[in-house]
Image 1 (cartoon, rainbow, N blue to C red):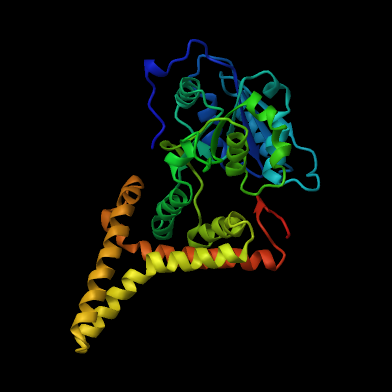
Image 2 (cartoon, one colour):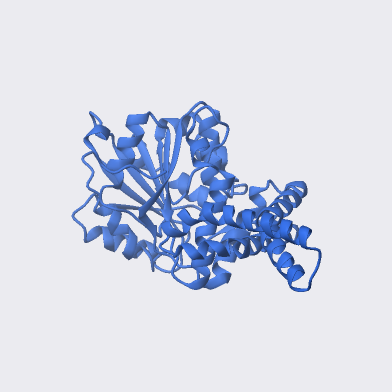
Length: 365
C-alpha cells in the first residue's frame, strides 16, 4: 500500500494551511540535506515550517536559520524547546513545543516529520489531497529507510516486514478495525483532531509516539491511513549492526507493553515461525545422509521446505522494495533470530533501569 501519486481526482476544492513541525536535537549534520526539501514543496496553500531546537549543542538553530534565510520559500521559524518536564518523552515534548507555536496555531493540518527525512516536492499535495479525499484525521507515510551496508540490507527490509505483520496496513487503514499505526517520520494530522485529544499531552509519556497518536485518534472515532513511500526517504544510516540494534532495542519491549508473558510469546512465536523450518530442513538432510529412518526424515524435509518457502515468498516483495535480490529473502530466518536477540536485549535494558530514549536521552523504568 503506497502513497498515491498526484492526480486531479485528489485535488481538493481548497488547499488548507499546513505547518510542518520538525523536532531537532543535534541535527546540524542532516538538516542541510532535508530541510531544503520542505522549503521546496510545491504546495498551493499556505505552508510554514517550524524547527524545534530541543537543547541542541551542535549549532542546530544557526544551521536551520541559515537554510531558511537563503531560501525564497516559506521560511523557517526556529523554536527553542524549554527544559523537558517530568513525565514527558523528549520527542513528544519537542512536537508539543512546535504544535503550540504561533505558526501551528493558524493552520488546519500539522505535518510532523523527523529531521532526517527528505521529501519529494509534491509530498504535501499528495498527503493533503489524500486526507481531504478520504476524510482522514491522520495520514502517515513510512519513509524508505537506508539499506546500503550488508547489515542494513539484512535487517532494514525485515524491520518493515515485521512491522507489517504486527500492524497490517489494511487493518490499520480500516476504520472498523481496532489496529492502528503510523510512522513518525512523516505524519499529517488534522489540528482539530489533535486538539480534541487534548494535544500531545494525551501521549506525553509515550516512547512509540507515532502509533500511540494513531491509536488515540482512532479510538476517538477518527480515520487514519498508513502507507509506504519510496520517494520519502531517510538520509540517516545505521552504522552497521550496532546502529540497527540500538533502534530496535530502544522500543521493542515497550511495544510489548513491558509484559513478560508477551515477551515469551513473541520470542517463541518468532522462533517457531521463522527458525523451525530451516532447522527441520537441516536436521532432515543430516538424517538422510547418516541413514536415519527415511519416512520421518522426508516428512521433516517436506514440511521444513514448505514453511521456509512460504516465508521466503512472503518476504520477496519487501526485499525487492529495498532494491535487494529476491535471493536475499532466503535469509529471513537469520534476520528473525537477530530480532529475537534485540527484543530480549530491550527487555534486559528495561529491567536494568534504562528504557527507551530519543537523541541522547534515556528513560528509566
